[in-house]
Image (cartoon, rainbow, N blue to C red; front, side, top):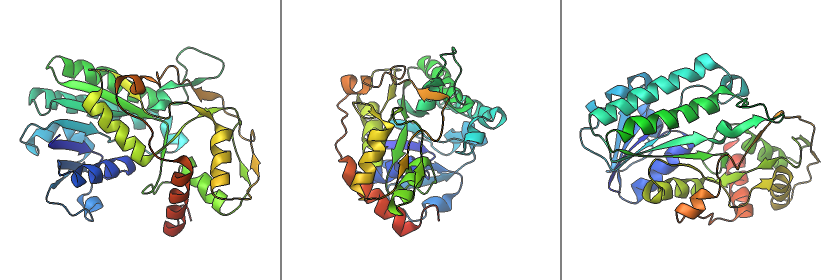
Length: 303
């Protein structure tokens, strides 16, 4: 891998991927809405492209050479539950992505595209209603996967997608549940939580980057993957382990929040990445929790 395009390069996962590939001497075309978002990354291998998502179909005007891989991490819309359910907010993402795929197909811009998906495509209603999911966001993501791979197949451009549940770690400035829970554990605050036995998955950022690259290098053609731990744990197992790692005295009230939806990890075929690639989780969960908590404290995340 010598040359790549990364869209959404200023986000949590996108920035981590960009930094990692730059450290390996890979030439990176980093596509962002605001070029100042990457101003701190100093590298002769970095080429910053400032481009709004509605103009992604013009990517060939900025990248005028074929690259080995394109990593598509861009997404428009917020991260709140309300925005996840807003179809008018989420649907343009499908249009932007389809236009982008047509552009790279017509201009033969890459050998392979890696799309970053979401476990929310498999977060179904607990009453087993067919195709009733917790938000339109997840199904728009899945639609991008399905349509994208079909567009690119006609030009022999390879395609894979990689979906995650909860990626956490140093560098995440958001106030998602992972950061919020760790911040409360640090402060020894009482925490109201979902049901203890809900199946859940937390993956550290370093392992997420490893998973993306394993799929890019080894994934079976046109296949969608879920990247997470080899064994899916209960929510209580994860949070209790985090509490112990931080020596927190927080009281954990499981079941205070009732969820009507849960992720079906079998639908995601969560073990396929272990069968098809060399991916494995190589970091220690408790160490990762401690590093992340320290970073949250130092950067006053959520304060």
